[in-house]
Image (cartoon, rainbow, N blue to C red; front, side):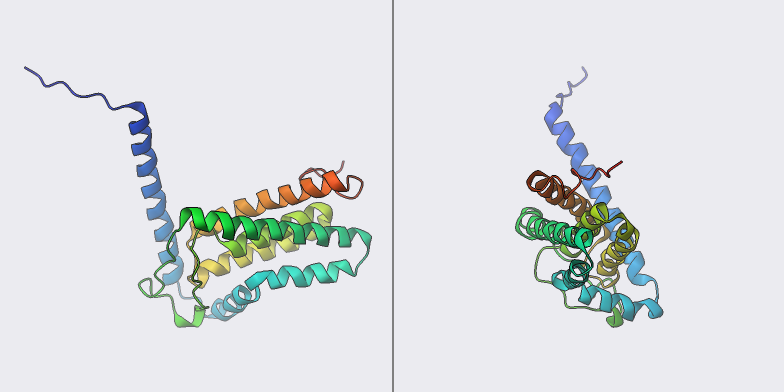
Length: 209
């Protein structure tokens, strides 16, 4: 007489699949982190370490915003939008994302990240990358108001995000999540600015035709 198999409730099946997918993604994330750590790049190490340090507390973004504020009316509006986006991204990453996920920082020593890349390991949770979120938020918001700045600022934001992996303080997944959060933060900041000053800012992320 054959044994009856107990059917798995749909919710349990979905949870199991989600858990397996997350496990696989973590494995890929860890493998990418290890690959970056194991790749010798002595020429890049010092530059990316300095860039990562310069991006602390959004110092680069604020410096650029200060320069834009002196360059005329439209650059000034772009600077204000960028600073607002940084504020939203920073609050979302540090007060919400990191407290909800609480992912541990990578084990830089176990991955044998060379000391030449080291920056101070933050005490906060790893997910998402606050540096990336703020840099992408600034680049997206400024680039929407001032399209000529979108490519250079986007490249800078990408470099900041990669520098956090290169220096060993974030997994690639943390940086990817930070980038998504940055775009969402810019959209939020622009939506607020558009509602308050509709003549000065585009609506959301839509470019004027």
